[in-house]
Length: 247
Image (cartoon, rainbow, N blue to C red):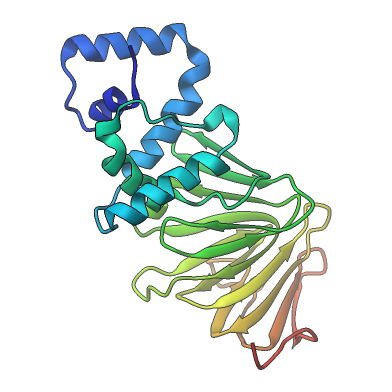
C-alpha cells in the first residue's frame, strides 16, 4: 500500500529498491496521482522543525480543512502526525478557498478564481493579497534566495525584508525590485500598462536590465505611484490618491 509515510521516506531517500519499484509501478498505473505526489514533495521540501508540537498538529488539521478535495492529503499513519504537522505548518499558504495551485517541472502557479482577493504566504514569508482573476508564477529557486515572481492581474505585496536577496516582480514588460516593503501592482491581462503604488518603504520600477535609450527606471517612495506605458514608450510618476499616512 502506498502511504504518505512511504512517500515521505522516498523523498528522504530512505526507501529500499523494492519500495522504489513499487512506487514507480504505482505511479505508472495511476497517472492521476502525479499532482498529489508533487504537492507532497512541496510539503516535504518546506519542512522545518521550529514549530511547537501542539501548534503544528492544529495547523495540520487546518490544512486538511482548506485544501480542495483532489489535493487533500490524509494522515494514514498516526506516528507521522508530528512530522507531517510540522511540515504543514510551513505549507499553510492556502488561506480560504478559490486558490488553485499547480506544480509543473519546478514551476509553481497560483491562480485566484474567486471574485474576492485571497491571501497567500510565499516560501520566504512574504504575504500576497492576490486579486480576482489574477495569477502568480514562481520557480522552485525562490526557496534558494532567487526571489523572483511573475504577476498577471493585481496584487498587494508585503515583502519580507532580506537585503541580500532582492524581491522582484515581473509584470508585463515592467519589473519592480525591492528588499522589503509594501506595494500594490496592477497589471491586467487586458492592458499592457503596469501601475505600482508604494504603501511603505521604496521600490525600483523599471522596464529593462539593460540601460539604453529605450529603458526607464525610477525610484518610488511611500505615497508615490508609477505607471509604465509600453506602447507610448513612457514611464510617469505621480502621487497615489489612495495613499494613507496612518494605518
